[in-house]
Image 1: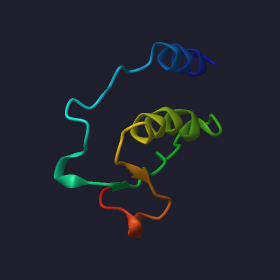
Image 2: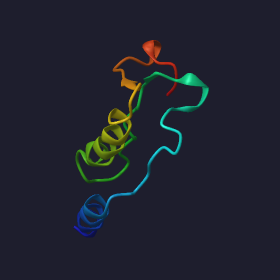
Image 3: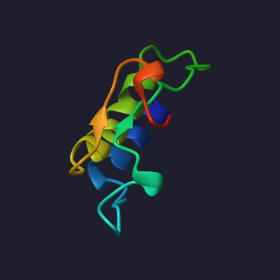
Image 4: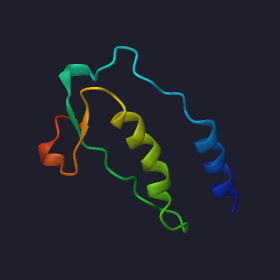
Length: 75
């Protein structure tokens, strides 16, 4: 239960990460973001962690999030 509370605090506070130049290095335009492996007893925690990360990258101009790593410029 503690881990859920900690995750909620982190999600509410936000990480504050942002791109300074507005684009990814190396002219990366298509990005694949894999889910983390869940090695805990807490179900679906990988989704809770991945969704905010994906949202940050999805808001960047010129960056497309792809579902298949074979179609990505970077992982």
